[in-house]
Length: 89
Image (cartoon, rainbow, N blue to C red):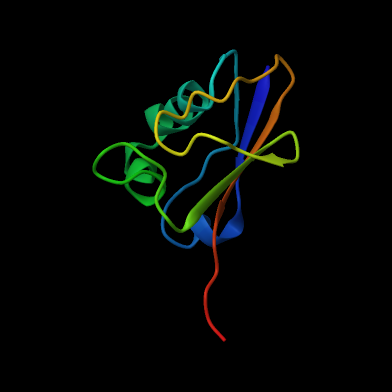
């Protein structure tokens, strides 16, 4: 099963479950987490359902390629990390 983890930055705002799910794409993986906590979706996706500009997703250590459709393919044992980019100086 793919394992989806949200980093601590997002935990400041809402519950971020770690999810194990049998899914084939990044969008399906994210949806599995949103099904547990619907409020999380607004922090990760914009109004069009695309990744927000300040969110980065890594799949098996590589940055996801598709920020719009979110159709990056997952393997059965993929590790997905969802990070909220930090800003400041």
